[in-house]
Image (cartoon, rainbow, N blue to C red; front, side, top):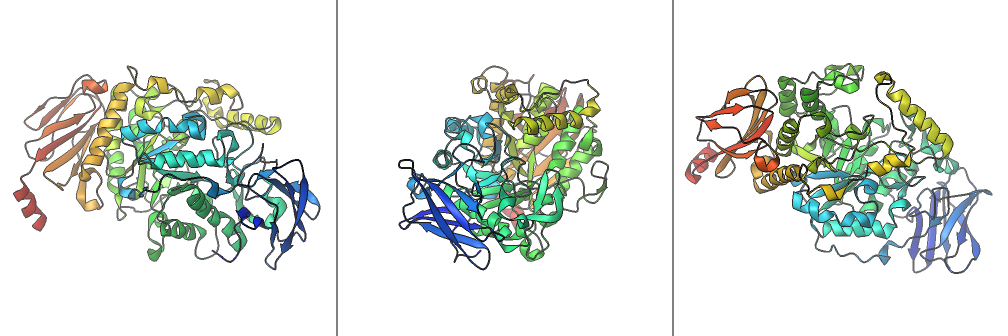
Length: 610
């Protein structure tokens, strides 16, 4: 990145406020500044350089001023690198001084990625506002979560949105509070031992409030489009800088620990190195982590740059979700049609990291994926739920709404203690009664189009389910978590299960292996499987998952095994832990178990030499 140029946007210094933007087809740019003191308006001319950047200093400028740009007498338009908006993405921008915030996280130390337990949340439905989220952080810490993954906060029109329609990628959404309110949330998270990973969208901008093309049509790729809008022309240095510098901005000005990049399969770049590799290099050089959402199952995404990869730490892995879910529900619509829900399919996922490794996908209509078994386990992010797998259902119903209580408990225990990186979606830890639905707050014409598109999306249901209107404010309101229920009967038992599982995960390094040589996946009966974790200390563990039905199964390894944790424990709402007699288990319902045996230190030492 070019460090000789000022930062993009408006920057406060002792000299005043420096304005800096890229508008290569514009000859004359004027910053129209509305002073925070009084009602005065002043014009600050910007000087153009040979690369199409325009820069100027307002010696009277200060934090709190509002401004917009005139481009050759067109406009005024908001700054693409605005740090905050006054009312809407169409309104004047606010000059923000990040140094005015006093941080309290001076003792914060990043969490090793291998040890992370991620928790995906949406600001508006989790806590209402940035500061409103703070009051719930202690519960997450006590649960065993140690990393928040916050859905996108780039500013958007309206009062609520999932965040993937953001249009100002440097401006935290004003409907949740000020930039300093967002800093306060991150500060509070760090002081409770929670890392903060921010979801960012670099594949498109939303349809309303996107003024980027007014500054240059070259921001957008001439041929590459995405399902949601035009893609970007990352081969141009100025376009590349706009997005790469955004990552640096969030890390420096907000102490963000890492990022999840949305739908990286839609980020096209003909130059070398690929912009994704440049982004991962930057983030990791600053001690951060970087995650991809990518549907391709491409090992290249999470392979080192030195080996021709993009260098990401991890990727969302949807195959596990689909395989374990279909195994309980039998769903066969859309992408679920690619999965049969068998025991062997789930074993394939657990062995290789993902199931599709070159096979033909009926849903994607192409061959998908390649081998991932050579990659470290932490590079695969597993989940039972996320915003898509809940909110993209017609009614936003949750997993526990469509499987039996016993199955939900078993799936939850099994998921929490797998060797891969776990991610929870807000509310799953207590089987929240509130749905998470798709909601928007667009202007009427665009909103009508979104509503009609939603109806077309679920036309295959043939009118059997009334499809909620995402523009209805009630849809957002009913998606907000009800924090009063999490410790009530019917919910606290699930909370206890997740807490016990995550505490065990943190306590025992065996459940966080660094190498694939540290565990093995084996089958038991027709509906059962097990993961044996090789002993690292005095105790050896086996994680067992019985999917359905009654059965009597033998533990596939000899030893004096004892039950440590059971999804059917009464304290978790179960009917009672299965009986273990002479290495045989009797199951009467879906169940997950952790069994263990103890080794003498002497035996462990001898085994380690071998």
